[in-house]
Length: 211
Image (cartoon, rainbow, N blue to C red; front, side, top):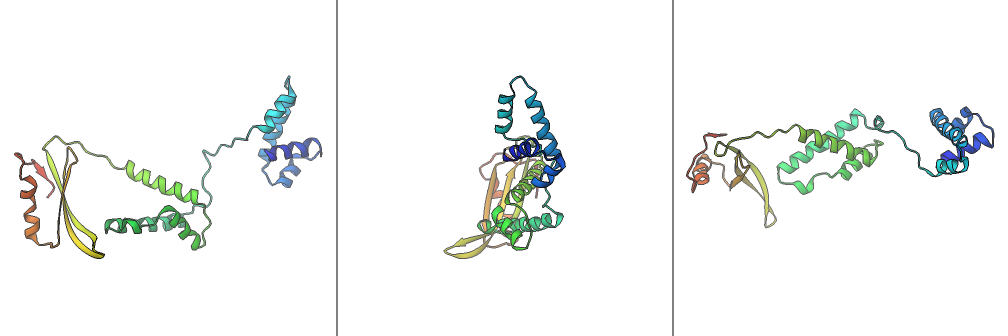
């Protein structure tokens, strides 16, 4: 708003050229042309006083839909990607609370000498997460058609001691229901005994499995 008043004042009262106004206020020539064009249109209306009042009080609108971030270089994207990969490892190993938040990633980039705003970091991470979620397509299965199996490790803190457990997870394809069993040993006997435990109490057996 101050910018509009200054441009109009320098043009109408000081008699400056558009080029000089652009140079003095450090604004683009295109902006000066647009504001003075609005000014010329306002003074030619039936009620120029009201039109000028509206022109000087309405906040200017800028089209930023096609504007691309200037500070977000490929090097910075790689650094953010490195932080997100470290986060994924921490989540997978049961250390979710130790992962870097967006503000931590922003501070990490600043500490390495990069110049980038917190909003730009948040926007980039949000877009990456959105693309990742859009790539997932869930398949449809008939009831009782399939059960999927996964086996991995999980770290738990018990009485302050970090302990490794082995986790077996079964997922029913239709309902997305999950059943999990954990063990402190990874012997084949433990794994081999899981399916009977899962199906105990059921009168049916899945036609396909992911074993």
